[in-house]
Amino acid sequence: MLIALSHIQRLYRSDEVETTALLDIELGIEAGEFVAIMGPSGCGKSTLLNILGTIDRPTSGSYSFGGQELTELGEAALAAFRRENLGYVFQSFNLIDELTIEENIELALIYRRMPKAERRRRVAHAMDHVGIAHRARHYPSQLSGGQQQRAAIARAIVGEPRLILADEPTGNLDTENGAQVMDILQRLNDEGATIVMVTHSPSHADLAKRRVDMLDGQVVISVRNAI
Ligand SMILES: Nc1ncnc2c1ncn2[C@@H]1O[C@H](COP(=O)(O)OP(=O)(O)O)[C@@H](O)[C@H]1O
Ligand SMILES: [Mg+2]
Image 1 (tube, rainbow, N blue to C red):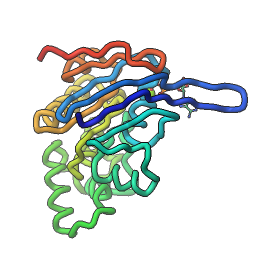
Image 2: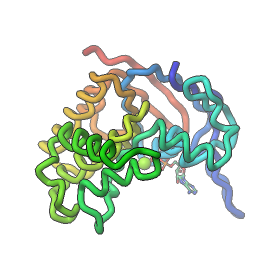
Image 3: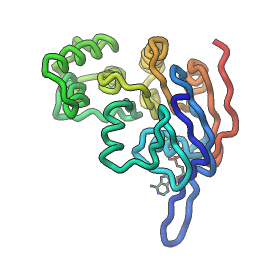
Image 4: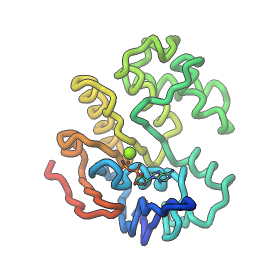
């Protein structure tokens, strides 16, 4: 098992109200899986993804990744863990406007000790992989949404992460560009990447290997897709 979440709870407290974003999550994910998470708005999908991504911490419960208990790590160790193991894709791409596409992708490697030639080689490879190499010197605003998302996927994979987390990666794209992004995610999964993707699209969820339905901060159904 690559990932084991056990009794994960996430509460948000303010003076007046307490919101239970995640009630009691039990979820195991094997290396090589492609999991689609679905559920109504507010059911806790992004909170779950943020906890998997160690951007957020659970209020209680255990998160084990490759046998290591992550809830015990401090901030510096978690930052190192993220750099080594995780790639993120967001609905709104989150590229830096002032940097070119290749600079955006290279930024994901800059905090690793890696010779510049090796960085360049990896960035070129990642751009080729998603069909964006011809836009290397362009800025994000000069690209279509589909191209920006493909560049964001290149940024996510350039460090060769063990886990790719995608929060509604096709949510801002038209049908054709959404299909292209799904093609790329499926190909990365075929090549061995483990992927967890939040989506509102049933047809995109069907392209994953497993579908997990959430409701009110809980996993209610987990089914393997027949593909
Ligand atoms: N920073 C926050 N402070 C307070 N409540 C939050 C915060 N983030 C999320 N929530 C609440 O947690 C619940 C789950 O939110 P979220 O994980 O974003 O749902 P989803 O992604 O499924 O739409 C919602 O009720 C939301 O209002
Ligand atoms: Mg969300």
